[in-house]
Image (cartoon, rainbow, N blue to C red):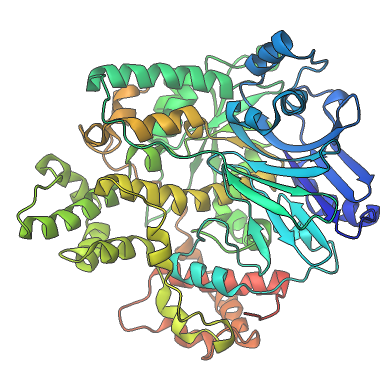
Length: 621
């Protein structure tokens, strides 16, 4: 895990080394072990290393091929690097180092971009191919690792985090009208969009290839596609569960590879508990005897943590377990620069994740997570509520319905959310249903300065282009895969890497993602929410955890702080939006809509205010 950045100058001159080192400095939190810089006109590369695999100096980057024809900067891990190295050595060349970086370099040298299709893991990288006079940028299929691109009139710049791009004084922070519309609608962004004008996120699973001589001729090619449901699936439900379990065992073994100590979060739910249980068998005895595990605890009258369940899991797998107390002082302190760490406002409350990561980093450099389980395996109660809303309309037309009576108890556990969805979407058309899922605060768009208004654009309509064909549940899952999941991964990447901690989500291995996409839809909710994962976890995770119906992603009740000891500062921050010219009415009036204020509205406006304080962006359409 690392930070990468660089620039290709269209003039043919070499980028400034001091600018490149400043880009690296702004990414130093991502990799504190080594900074490497390569300047060779018209290319400049910088790499900040966090040593995980092959920790010796041979793994330092930028990495250059023996013949000098290829240079590479790489962020992430190729978890099947040993298998790929063995394959390469049989066919092509001998790898002299123990890590995954040389495997990627040698694989590309031998097979070109087709080699990328063999990769498993989480990664973003840039290759400079002097032989073909081209540059190549690529991200993993799920977009676990970030890579941002700015193409100006004088250069193509790229970096793991947007803030590094502004080391070039020619690149100025400006508000993107498109990104702002995304954020105020969804509190996240459609694929490729950011809140910074002129800065794009490289699309996951895509390859950007261009000419380094002039640089402007670039093509973006989609290399990975989410497969469709396999209509000829031959396995029974029981055999599918067994097959999935074996795949998870093999995948977690790959994702546990490390030349340093590793740990795992245990939230008290199925996903993280299963990953921890599997990873416990694959720690490197040279660095640790037991898997380190971590759970968050806090005291609150509003919501209770799930230490009861996380403690049971830790005891069952025999891990070295640490409870991390999320105290009020830490939460307040971590709000100070959390939006700067994130680069831009996104998703929900983020400070607790950073507090967790800081403590975890005192024990390990790598932590396993359960990210992706809900979005792949249908783990959110909203899927049942949305399916019910859809089925009510279908029933009126005399069409068959999917919702089952045995699913309804899940809605009783999350009655407030279910009522909200049904009130917005029941008996409506498909767009109104998806709008109820996506639209969090679009009413704010009416008060945006005319300079940033985009009256002809419909965010929900654009989002619907991502879902493809299939059942309603499949569409809901694909929509979350392209909108919600990237936001969660964005938060996880920044809040872990700001503390120099590598976060790994094995459930987002491309093999597992494709498997869930191909299984029969009926299997996903056969025995309730997250049915396949729930049943695959039997025997690995205690039944008490698997059968807990109330697991719902418990997190620190941040609004207690916003409405309590932080209230004065929060109100002052939100009021500072009046100085930016972003809205045409005072910010305090934005929080007085008749239908009531959602906690997310306050968080969204506070996040925007902090973003303006940190980056001072210009207003431009």
